[in-house]
Amino acid sequence: MCGIVGGKRVPNLVDFLIEGLRELEYRGYDSAGIGVIDNGELRVVKAVGKLFNLVQKVEQLQWGEVEVGIGHTRWATHGKPTEINAHPHTGEFAAVVHNGIIENYRELRRELERENIQFLSETDTEVIVRLFEHYWEEGRGGEAFRQTIDRLEGAYAILLISEKEPDKIYFAKKGSPLILVQNQEQFLFASSDTPLIGRGEKGVYLEDQEWGWVDTQIHLFREGIPIEPHFKPLPTNKSSAQKEGFRFFMEKEIYEQPRVMEEFLLGRVDRERIQFPEIEPQFWEEIDSITISACGTSYHAGLVGKYLLERYAQIPVNVEVASELRYRNPVLSKKGLFLVISQSGETADTLETLKMANRQGLKTLALCNVDNSSIVREADRTILLRAGIEKGVASTKAFANQVLALWALATFLGGKEGEVPFFYKAIQKTRLALHLHDRIKRLSKRYLHGHGFFFIGRDIFYPLALEGALKLKEISYLHAEGYPAGEMKHGPIALADPELFTIALLSRLLLFEKTKSNIEELSARDATILTICSEPIEFTDDYLPIFSGEHPMEEFFQMMVVVQLLAMEVAIRLGNDVDMPRNLAKSVTVE
Ligand code: M6R
Image 1 (cartoon, rainbow, N blue to C red):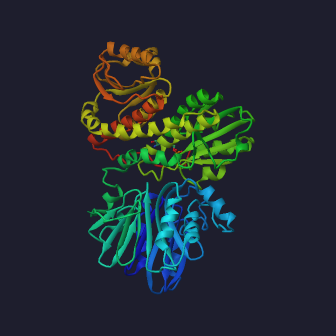
Image 2 (image 1 turned 45 degrees about the vertical axis):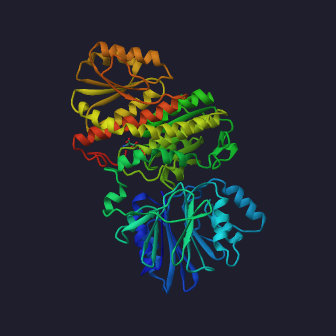
Image 3 (image 1 turned 135 degrees about the horizontal axis):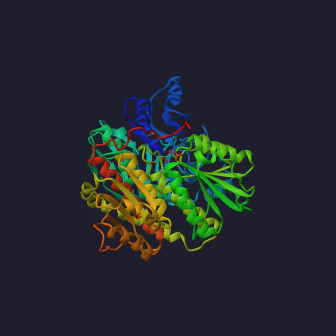
């Protein structure tokens, strides 16, 4: 996820910008840059890769009287992680940094290009500075900024500086966080509170649709009307600030899911249809089958994808564990699409299968969270997951966006109309599921011992059962298995007794009666059963309620949150390190 800092009248402003970006490194980035007005002149320095590369460049320069400045760490979403695509983006006299996505940037860019305005980068952000300069007139900078943000669709936190008004920083917020601190005559901005800690006691956590500028004071507007800034105390502890108030990164990442899911869809929904503007239409032609290759959680997402792709697009799909596929000499159709799924983009087994598919001349596509990773570089095309950096070893929000991406792909390839509203309903339900957290916390104390867990479900809830079991075993170190509910009676039911915990994912919309009777079979053998369903089931022991809705994916994403939180609460009660469980690494770059 990108990070923003900015400052006015801050002593050693260039150092503050670099230090601020360092505080935001934990969010992940692939390039960085700063822009300042130095003795009235706009100066911008950018570098690809780690902050160290930017610092080396900055240290070689002489700096004069720097009044205002902005800085940015970029996590590539539109355009490769190159120096040109790094922020700040400049026009003739202004510079901008931006977090979020401008959904209508293509239309805006075409419009400006018709006016002979030339663009340098591939990013969505550059339109902001180009629009501002287009509207700018002497003495009417605030109006030009208002006109600019009125044209933007999507999400943004923006800071903009200009040689024409060297004492001002313009700011705007919609959908992406932005905080402003005033400390006497100093003004400081950041996209999360860590760079601001110790720099002031209180900050303005800007609300959506708020915008304005700072000069000698704060000028703040909402819907064109001036409003008073509302200050709140800033946190004082940096490491907990990085966790943004949550106990673990995993918890923070679970809570981020609705937001990153929305970000995934930005620019990929065209009225009632899903689209992938990053991939040219010809790429999708003449695909007769899909092979999905992945590991761990990404493999589970792939299994969900199989149900969805076959159902919506009527394309045969084969899902493979990459470590098995790479040594199997598989027979792959030349007209097949080879789809790899990976959060990190560095998983060795997945990467090797991708190379194998490329050698065989298949079309290859990656669903990946890290741009410029080995998998992204190797694949013909990529759909970026936009889940932001995932720090918890147990994958959560990347899984959410992998499944969302596969659902979107299935809808797109199936030419299915009318599905888009369900995407937003499912995201909203994911948000609602988080309200169950207290109940899960209390219930978790009953699920700490026993001789094992079975997570059971059918259809898309079967791969979710596999994922629920994986989450639990990764961080609680308890034995858990995911199983198709209908398969229990073919063996595993022999284990059933009160010490066998069954977590039943019971959809009201898919195979309800059938799954219910599978649960009843376990109940008859006295297994302890926790049901996740939109209605209580009388013969089970515990119940976590979800809302059913009209679409199984609404149930899916709620149950996903519930199994993630359950695993986390059990692990916390057992005293385990949730973010760094024993024996595991975040990225598995060896066989
Ligand atoms: O980065 P990848 O998605 O390729 O990683 C694949 C697996 O190593 C990963 O999903 C692993 O299973 C996680 N620890 C699951 O929480």
